[in-house]
Image (cartoon, rainbow, N blue to C red; front, side, top):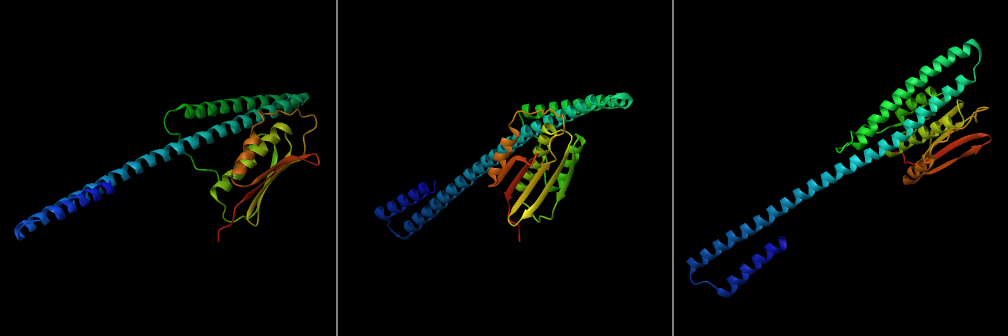
Amino acid sequence: MWAAALTVLGVLALLLTTTGVDGPRAGRAVAAVAVVLTVAVVGWAAARTRAQRRRYEEELAAWAAERAAQTERLRIAADLHDLVSHGLGLITIRAAAARSLRGPEGEAERGNALADIERTSRETTTELRRMLGVLRAPGAAPLRPAETLADLPAIVTAANAAGLTASLHLDEVGDVSAGTQLTVCAVVREALNNTVRHAGPVRARVSVRRAAATIVVDVEDSGPRDGWRPQPGAGHGLDALRARVAALGGTLHTGPVAGRFRVAAHLPDRPSR
């Protein structure tokens, strides 16, 4: 549009140069007309520029809102995996433990286990329906604060409620970026959920520390419980976690170590100064 405005002004100047004017009064009239036309053309170009900028900003805001909603829906979908894994893991552990008990105490424990299974099933079903309702809704998903390192104790407590005996060792790590904190929580949750399914009600140790410009997350269990039958999931949890860690430039190592299973993540994160 500024090119068009300059073109109009150029044509006007060319006409004035080629046609000329006779007398001072005519010259003043032509100059006034030229000034008016110049102001009008510049004003028109400026107004068009502001209008286009407003449209661009509105489109950019709409695009950002849509991306935020899609990102939240993807996070909710990942939470569905954690929710179902945790609920089914707790039900499996309580059922297996109650089945192995005998005598009067076993009868009482079986009653408690059935009550826990019923409560967990109801809570998991209710939360599952709520999340599916959010995913199906046409509008934006409700945003919630991203997890931080302060959420790690609650994650470990939830794993202990599922039957583990897990401990958390969180060293002083200084300032950590929001993306790294979110990924640390995802690593710990997935590792503990896997322990519940594959090893049963065993001990687990969670460690988070800083090594120079790297945050190191280490989750290791005490080995599978005798007679425990693994309850494998869909098999996508660790693959998705590995991709998430790699997106931050980090590495994820998983596998058995001397009869135990270990999940170790190294996440690059430079401390702020």
